Amino acid sequence: MRNLLIISDLSYLQSIDESSIVYGGNVYAGTVTTTTTGLKYATADAGAVAIGETTYTNAQTKTNVQNLGSLDYSRADATATAYAKTGNQTALSRSSSTSISLDLTNR
Image (cartoon, rainbow, N blue to C red; front, side, top):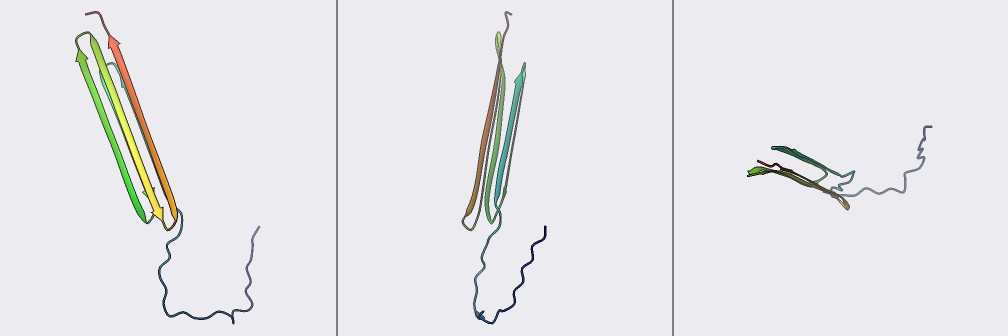
């Protein structure tokens, strides 16, 4: 269905000499984090996206794989933050993920 707007009389409008920019529109913030661990490996991924007039993104990952004698230890951490603001609209997204694997062997 199509809507039509018909304006027949604009004589009441007045002109203005100055104007200021008005920012509007949509804002968006999104994050994603994934981690996996297993025997002697660890992976971490983090992503952040923000759309708006003022934006901030931060994505961090950390992995650690160690052999502690008869114990194999793997850990993966991922965090992401996204923030966007336009006018009075604000969007915020945060996510985090952690995976830990322990393998105990009798060596």
